[in-house]
Figure 1: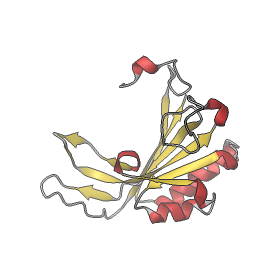
Figure 2: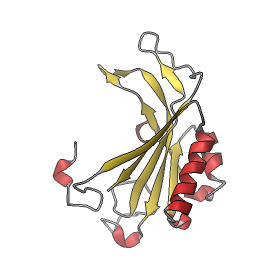
Figure 3: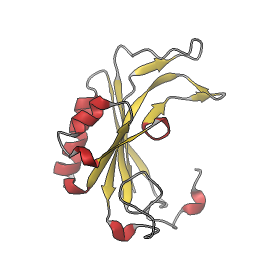
Length: 167
């Protein structure tokens, strides 16, 4: 882990973590994954939908449109490659294999949990803050990058790879 020295220093760095995930290899895609996530979080876990924010890949209009069925567009944030694009394995500073945009689900624990009250903590992903916690990441592997050619064509059967942390 790259942040072991932070364990115990914030509400996000704990000593137990288990990754919960689900996958689809061509059975369903973005619309299904987003609907399943929303239903699980709001109906099964009964989390308050008013306290959820989403991030989407900056070029993924499709995911943003799907989220607006559940939350207002004002609670959807767009991020670039570093935050909301998932590449498969890395080999000598290049990567190949399945890849695609992702969307992250954040929960708002309130402004009282801002690390630095003098710094704006009004939306997730801007800086480290205990107010916002990413609770689920939905990855949409839909391209297949080749290290030989550098091409990144669409996959015949796009998939779903989600991860939720249980802490």
